[in-house]
Amino acid sequence: MEKIKVGVLGATGSVGQRFIQLLENHPYFTVTHLAASEKSAGQTYGEVMKSRWKISSDIPAYAKDIIISLPNPEVTKGVQLVFSGLDASIAGEVETAYAEAGVMVLSNSKNHRMDPNVPILSAEVNAHHLDVLKSQNTKGKIITNSNCTIMGVTISLKPLMDAFGLKSVMLFSMQAISGAGYPGVPTMDILGNVVPYIGGEEDKAEVEPQKCLGTVEAGVIKSADFKISAHCNRVPVFDGHTVCVSVSFDKKPKKEEILKVWADFQGEPQKLGLPFAPNQAILYREENDRPQPRLDLETGRGMTTVVGRLREDPILDWKWVVLSHNTIRGAAGAAILNAELLYKKGFFN
Image (cartoon, rainbow, N blue to C red; front, side, top):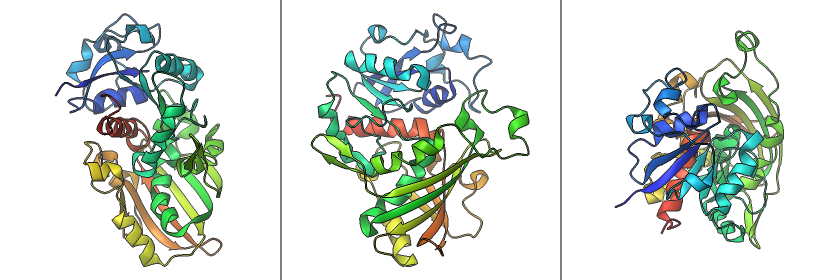
């Protein structure tokens, strides 16, 4: 079976590097197009990344000899899909240009997330949101990831919302420094410290989950009707976003009911056996001191949402802790899983 040609926009950045690592030997996709800024354009990826590669494994051999171009859909040479790790300062216009040229765009940037006919796609949570792509008026289509902080949160909420309904949610995040990209947070600001502010994060955390968990009506996505309050904090952990969640339900469940709903949860990726789908979308840890980034981050190759410390909340109903890998489940891995879902649903036929 011939593989689908794909590209990576923002290929030299932290998310772009993760795409290139994870796409090595992918059964559906082959990378033929890498795009980055003017200072990298015209050089091979291997040359540019000699001293800039920040992932523990080596640069994949397949990528080293690809010549980097400026982001330009006219040089894609048969590429049907691009994964975008572009900075938000340029992502909106560039991604639209690729979509207008007939290329499917899977974006990690915030620019198009709140467009009513653009899905914030989380493959286990809202695969049915792909229905709104028909209302986009470009030849190609744009699909976004959620903010990395709320990716694991919405996965933990989805089966509970379906079973018991949601009234309100409180979030308190402890976000890894890799979420700020490279070079990221200055050393003297983060070592031995907690920074109780991340620009724009709380705004995104208070509106994106409702859209992710919303319904499709008349070709657009209608956000779910529950409220969220969020505190977002940067902590001195390299990878892995930990979020403390408190929830009020329409119908308060028992603890064993919540645990059963999580244990039984399977989204379309699990049912379809997609390559990047973890066997368990949600794994509950019984230990009092789990999940922890150091111990649990690589569960399911970084794609499993790890949950723990479920207990009654004296103000709302229940509270728990969510851990997800911010650059895999919350970024590149999630976008690849979304692309696999598109592939299986025949979007590239």
